[in-house]
Image 1 (tube, one colour):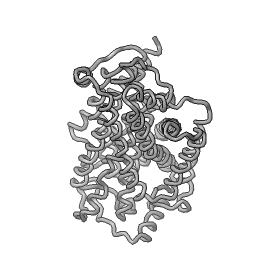
Image 2: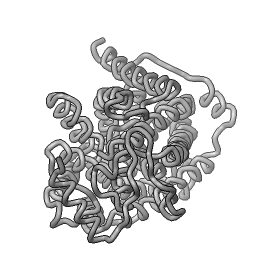
Image 3: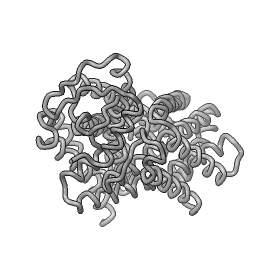
Length: 450
């Protein structure tokens, strides 16, 4: 039965005079070969997701870990890289094959108590992290421009909200691609830190693990922020938005994908996650080679993390650190608030999509506005921005494992995926990731009990 959402999206497609591809199925896609413009239009989706993964929350978490544990924590970057690729690619494949976002698929195949529990966890995690990110951005802007922080918080929130409400999906996608490049600032900051090569090699290749609360808290926070739940929902919904932008507005047209498109997505996501992981590595390296070495192990704000680099690595390192927070924050906050709106609308059956105008999907854009305003309001409650950033990473660490478990079950379900179910290699990697994040969270709970 065609839903109101599908009928509306079909009308949107006709108004845009788009010619849809011939759809495939969960079996073999029969879509014709696309023109190069369409093939390359979706290149960079993995880059956007990867950059959003290095949001101010992640930056604060990585900086805190580097300052407290030094270069010995660098091994977490190469270890989490394959996990990042696995979960984002699985989400991408789910969106391409089903033609639906993650929570729409969960709604179709699982009991309401599972659906609603997952939704509550994701909404809380996304909103806390978006609010913490807005605070982190405001602190970084304040470091560079002498303007009162409350004013910056309001202006930043308003600017991000305007981009989401009045910008088209194509505009948002293209803006995000350029903002992703701001993360390269951390590569420069790391080189300015002049790290010790021996320490770097040891920290990268030899895992150093402790079983105390401080270490496990940071480990769970890092896993939580690198494998955040908002990445899954954003990637699956982004794949759906791409198909709608190509004119495939009906659900029946969006179902199924081709081997070519899956291969393209695989490489795109691989490069995007490598970029994200590389940035994580250099943030830990920059703070581990400077703040940790100088004994500055407690960081109370994003601005302090950047400011602390000045006497050690110079003013350029301070500026680069702050600029990276600002640039990626403008990218990441909309991913979280829009992702939360997608999830809510899919669960409740409301019309949604960035391809729609505000008057066409009032509840969707109202949800985006609500989550953004709640995130903004968090910054007027006296919560320390960086501590909120790390806390949000820990919250994501607890909400992510159950959602990833559902993704693994769904992508192995032939009723959902047809012959596109996971292969052996992807299953090994996926289930290893599930075990790893459940174990890290259990380890943290164990230290709290002790």
